[in-house]
Length: 112
Image (cartoon, one colour):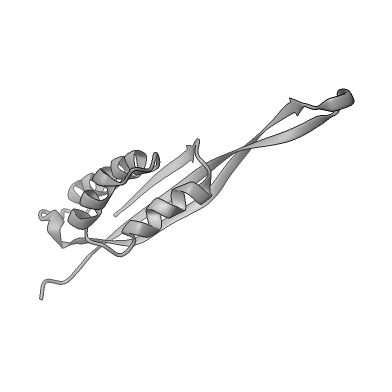
């Protein structure tokens, strides 16, 4: 039960703030947190969560999504786009436009 988001155009540092907030929670709790979080990264991560739940239903035959828990929510750096900003006396400074690679892994929790 896995979903991957490649080359999302936001820095990994900003994405990790949101991912760490929902790591270890159930899918229902994570949906509630992501729905009301005022960060720009919350929307694509919520979409990624829905994709992982759909993958679990189709591929792993999980009928009830309330037994799913976020096992791992990893945000790594993707490709870095290098741009240049003109500076004084004909020099240039490099601007790094960072991207993120996000991996979400769900697991089934045993009912108590």
